[in-house]
Amino acid sequence: MATEPALAIRQRLASDHHRPRYHFQPPCNWMNDPNGLIQWNGQYHLFYQHNPNGPLWADMHWGHAVSDDLLHWTDWPVALAPTSGGPDERGIFSGCAVDHAGTPTLIYTGTRGEHYDIQTQCIATSDDGLLTWRKYPGNPVIDRVPAEAGQTRDFRDPFVWQEGDTWYMVVGSRIQDVGGAVFLYRSADLYHWEYLHPLLTGDIRRNGITWECPNFFKLGDQWVLIISSHMGTYTASVIYFVGTYENHRFTPHYEGVLDYGTLYAPLTLVDSQNRRLLFGWLREDRSLAEQQAAGWSGVQSIPRVLTLDDHSRLNMSPIPELATLRGQHTHYGSGTMAAPLAVGGLALDLEATFEPAATEPCGLSLACSADGNKRTDIVYDPATGQLAVRKITPELFDITTTQIRAVPHPLAAGEALHLRILLDGSVIEVIANHRTSLTSRIYPLPTDDTHLRVIGGQALHALDIWEMSSIWPV
Image 1 (cartoon, rainbow, N blue to C red):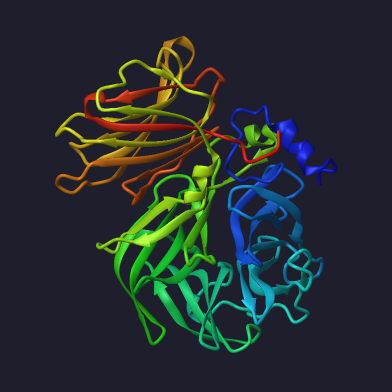
Image 2 (cartoon, rainbow, N blue to C red):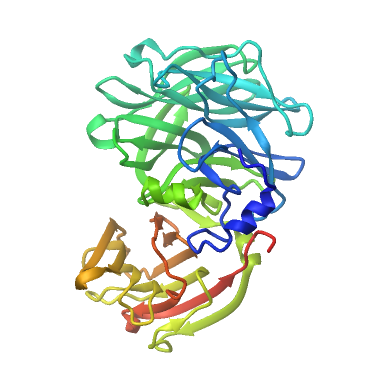
């Protein structure tokens, strides 16, 4: 574990131009899933999967950070660590947080076994303002996978809510040879749980082998289930279902994709403004050797506010508080931007509106070299109804590498294309028309790749660019 102060570590790594300036990450080392989101006495608490001893996945702990505004974070001590001989001796996996009659309570997955093949649900509480945590002596509170699962290993990431005086929990899992599953439990006291039935079961061929990190909540007058679908390799995605929930039975009538890119294992909470907020882990897209050399891995997304539109689609927008980090502002209207624009670095917030022609692609090129040969295009093709992130990197011997991730984004008749793009070092978060999310990571980025170009400039209606401030003391 690093011995130098967190601020000193952050300052030492600040010159790394891949490292984000306004997205949260720990001072160093590995981070993945957001955990235990809760607002307590007005402060937001973010826990997260963390290896305090290195920048690669291993030895899972729960890191901890606190914020007054969801933007500026203070590092707190590690909240949960494995206990030798306990049900979590191999790692503290993901989970959630609740207010249990005035006691802050964490519910998490403890793991044992050489291959993490014993996964059980555990509880910890705090009596000193969430600074330190005491594990329940009777852990685990759920000690086995339901028999109908047909397997004993994948059973993790509890999400808990309260209806009246009764607590409910969903746990991510799978049914052998069938597909991902979410199992539903209930309890009168958080400590003694009764298994009910699968809340939802997937199709192994269509939406994955294992479902992880479930979120189940009411939004408006409908219910939403978000799951992270593991396909059996590194391939994974985040999907959601919208439907009705009666007599503890969930009936979905709409299925969508929450993010098509690097965002994974999101977790939500409702804050004091009655907003359903979502955080997500933005995965790296570089080799383990590069992560090891950098000394850090993993970033949290900017929190998003979730709503449902009239088509039962999840809509999402970065929290409005993000506007407080905006600095230098440049606006372009229709036909006013032709030449490449040199922008102030790699920490930007952009909003662009296009009126697409029938066949001509439109969008923005970010992190461009002055000659435009190296760039990342966020481009919409109205002929195919696809939104794409296209990374173009010249290499040796006049060879150019192009990586393309294209996803469906149909526009209604007469609907303009609206892009909200957050560029922050190696992070790109793209949200199109508030409903299609395509996150990405870009490497490497020489410090002079700070130009911006418009694709299909004749379609541009408006472009606003803000340079963003760092959330960390300099």
